[in-house]
Length: 337
Image (cartoon, rainbow, N blue to C red; front, side, top):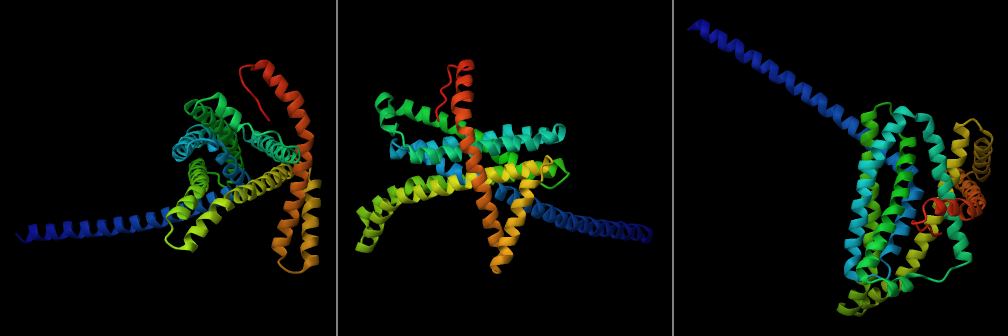
């Protein structure tokens, strides 16, 4: 009996020791997991910041696709576009980005610069259209198409635009990821894709319903201040959308120019980057306060000017060469700028 008790006592000791070791392993795994998670989130935040210009433009562009449609259909339409955006980023673009980074890493910078050229072109084209506005076509669309077909057409157009912007976001994010682990890179890109898509379409949903909220407040408000705020909100929303559009355009030119300058630096032409860097540093030291902000502002301004100049150069190339050639090979596609 004493032998059996001794055996049971040894088994209990072994179990206790094993439990202690398992607990230590779990604790260490939790610490490592938390550290990895924090690193992934930190890298994702940095990568998302690099794509800020495209994100702002995405948020500024999307509301136009629900203009002229019934208010009850605004949120369902935005959800359709957001769902397609999640699919584009996570199912198509994320694996493509990882495969590109694994087998053709040298192609990342040229593709990034191609996306930068697109941003410069889009930004310059928007400024050109502001200076030379075209008649609004939404009313003409509504006259030709019924609500269901108009919604379908708008959603398809929005998804195509989102795919282009999503490709830019994922490429910019991939270039900003600083890790040798494919798994970590995939996690970072997934976090960026989910976070940016949720942010963009959450903001868009709020923006397109703010005027409805203001109208409701102006009608049911119990006090004059509430009704006045509702009316102010209705009147302010077009101004807010205009501000967002301007900020989005400026961000596109800044990010596009920055991508081109950094791409040239990576490819071996260091002069533009070095000159801009030296000018920014000299300006910051000359001012003597808020040097970090001054350096960034000078860099962003010069990058924006470069982006605008490049965009203006690309406009006739795209509209008079690329679009006509594209139309010859794909006559069924309508390319409008």
